[in-house]
Length: 281
Image 1: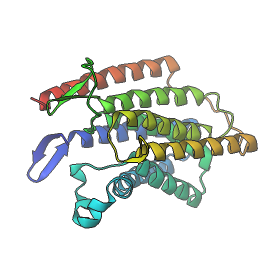
Image 2: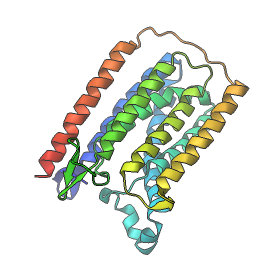
Image 3: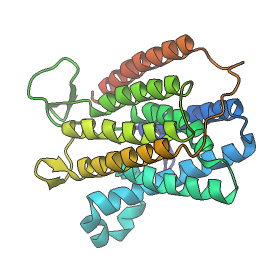
């Protein structure tokens, strides 16, 4: 994990900085969407903060249970060494998602309406946070110009692949929010789309295999995709809640958002290669 600087025994990592930045921007967008949907801003902020915290815990637990259980059973104290890496986004989604639905039910919030307000900020935050990840891809079979040299090997920049896919998913969700047919549609588009992104990226990463050439992460992603599609069809057929269209006054125009995302990706690419060039020297 790349350490940017340290103060005494306290160190600041690249992943920590980009994750915090993604969390802040994501929460700001969630607040903006909450206003558009006329949701309680304070309750929405509480939900966002608690869910982010539970997401980190879930990511750690997911990695331990799905990817390296034997090691942590033999070395239980290593569970707390999160600075050494070892997070699973699937675990984060499962734990944070379960908590979010429990919280919304407990506080009597409009569950699917709130879920739709949250997901644009969530996927944007994930795109930004992933820029600082230091889990690279497998070695390249050819010397492609976008490869990253690590330890004398030219590797696939798997993090950057996921950043690009997450930005694309954000744009799909952002555009669809204006034409969604029922509350909850955006949430399931996010779940299916993000699992699909992870499935694609896993072809460029090395993880424990589960079925043939498919990794554990591949299998988890496929299960989430299938479950998400089934629930999406169920919700669409049931039409549990017709969407309430709200005023777009004061919201960002699509052209501006698209421009910001394109610029954001360009900045992410420059930052990604720049930081790894500096710290690989």
